[in-house]
Length: 218
Image 1 (cartoon, rainbow, N blue to C red):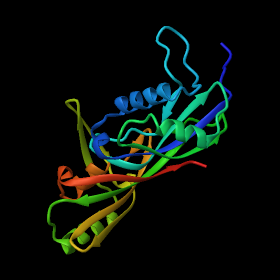
Image 2: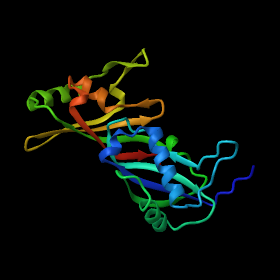
Image 3: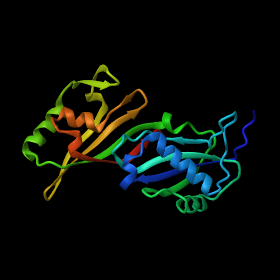
Image 4: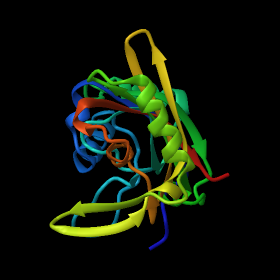
């Protein structure tokens, strides 16, 4: 069937506060509800279970917050980006804040295929020996390989974590210690902040993890 859409808009939005406990699928549903309440002329899929044509860049793990989440929507009628941002924000769930809307070509590659890297700020909640942690960061970056075992759904997968770490820096401001991580975020090779923390001997549950940048292929 011939496509009806005439425009594709890309939303940059924050996911903060209570929405840190909203999973990827529930986040997509929250955005869909906001689209419906804002009466946006969104394109719907065909078939029995019709859904708004909406695409998210990369799943944000439960408990994380972000300043830079991305979503694309396709529209059957043209809407100015500023108007779309205003209408959506008036109907958006608390904790989701749209900070930018731009128009992109309707035939541009999918967000998922364009996502290459992400940057996180990881604030440590427990007291640490900063000098010792700095040595661990340096050793991790200098290591030719960092063998790691990922356990999910009762299955174990061994892989090398080191190629997934593009940059890792220890920041300190007064008593607060933060790690800045720039990690690979491609579909088949994604680095996770919690696994970097484990490689440093830190507890991922004793940290606030906030995504500050998504890098897309040009």
